[in-house]
Length: 391
Image (cartoon, rainbow, N blue to C red; front, top):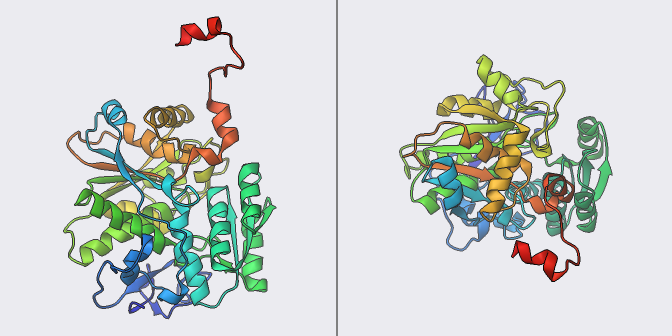
């Protein structure tokens, strides 16, 4: 196990590994895993994200995996042309075992739960997070309760149940999360910022996205665009790029950009106001349910500032247009993923710079949403005469 501890992002206090569900015991801010000394990046015997085991805080006997990681980094010429960005890449996280980047998060998080002796895990979800949690609970052999958003897809609720977890549709998810953690001994598979309960370990899985991008490109990109809600999707890669620099493997880090929907953009409002605390969206609305959180954690906002980046938003029309553009090039994603491209298209990036958009989840798990935006008739039993004009 690497020589590591938990360290507060605000007051820099250090603590031994454990569950600090309300953040730093001294100041209440977010904790992250910090590594002492020097560790290699890779372990030749590992697979998936666990090939980076020297930079992950879990001994081999507790590691849980379904083969997550090693996802493609792809150029889509038609999309690059439309964007006017020849070096526009997409990190396609839909290639993970449950078709979203959440698998990295839960591989690290459930491994940490086992390391710390927890046999019960709880989380809340709009869809992807809960499906992935249920799958990794099955792999880890632990009990799992998933509180589902009222607008979550019935398909994903059924997937959660088929994996063996307990799906519960609930309006006040956050309050019940805290009760199960505090009173029933559950480990929270939640974000690194206390919203309302946290753990520092899931984001360690997300940082491997940065490691892979660096390996696949042979360098660090100039810009990275990440759809964000609680913010771990941006902070995780940012942490990974920072560790690459600390290890002397690169002398630079990318500029980080958070992508949100215009109908729910608390990071954008905070960034435009120059605030250091994420705003609260009073009436969130968007087709991009996965990033429709009312607020988010400070670590991602700070990463945007520290990288010289920005928080960007896209309208519903722009999000759907980006989804269609990606689908026409061969990748079908959910609206939250398409938001990254929608924001990149309007960001004004220089044409000679390298941009990576993070595609977080597949459209296949959102059948109702896909049906709602498909605008062509489906032919049923056409005659040859009816079909011929289309051929």
